[in-house]
Length: 240
Ligand code: GLN
Image 1 (spheres, rainbow, N blue to C red):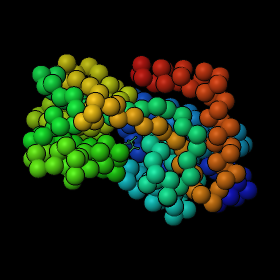
Image 2: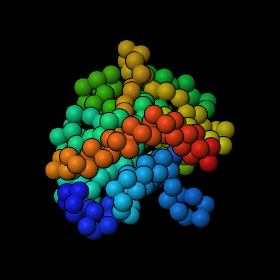
Image 3: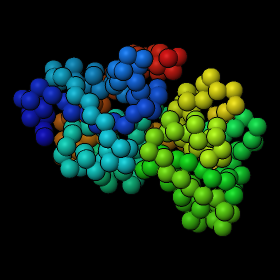
Image 4: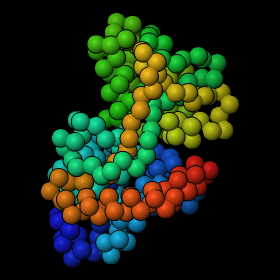
C-alpha cells in the first residue's frame, strides 16, 4: 500500500505489541494508550486518515509488515542492522538501554553476573538476542545461564517474584514502570562485559516500498521532538 492507497482507504494500519509501558499499554478502562499510540495518531492526522491499531506477538510484527498486512509498526522497536534488512526505519525517536528486573536482594550489573541464572526476555527482542549471543559465544558461554522466551514482558514481575526466573532483560523505561510499586523487585541497568551501556534507539518501521509514508513519519517525529511534545508525552505516560 502506497500513500495514495492509504489516503483512499481512509485508514492507516499500525501493528504493535502490548503491554509495553509507557509506549503501549492498557488504561484502566481497557483503552490502548501510550507514547507510540499518540505518535501514530499524529501521523494519521497528518495524512488526514484514521488510525487502526492491531496487536500481534512481538516477533510477528516485522514479518506481518513485510507481508503487507499493515502500513507501519510502532512497538518500542529498536533500529538494528538485522531489522533494516526487513523494513525501513524512521529517524530515531527514543534513546533506550537494556535493564534487568531482579529481586531487590540481588546485585547483578554486568552480563557475566548472569552466569548460572535463569533469565527471561521477550521473544524476538533485542534483550533476548543479547543474552542468546552471550550464551552462544560470549561471557555467558558454558556458565549454565538459561534463557527463557517470554510472550509478554509483563510476565516478568510474577516470574521473578515467584522465583521461576532470576532476572528479566527488558528496556529501561519498561523495567522501571513494571517494577514500580514492587518493593521486592528492582530495575537496574545491564552493562556489557567491558562495562558499556547497552544502548539502543527506537524507530517507526515502514515497508521499504513506501518512502512517501516514511517521509511523512519523519516530519511528524521531527515536529514532536522539536516542540518538546514527545518528552512531555513520555513524562505523562511514565506517571500513569
Ligand atoms: N526495544 C526492544 C526491541 O526492539 C524491545 C521491544 C519490545 O519488547 N516491545 O527488541
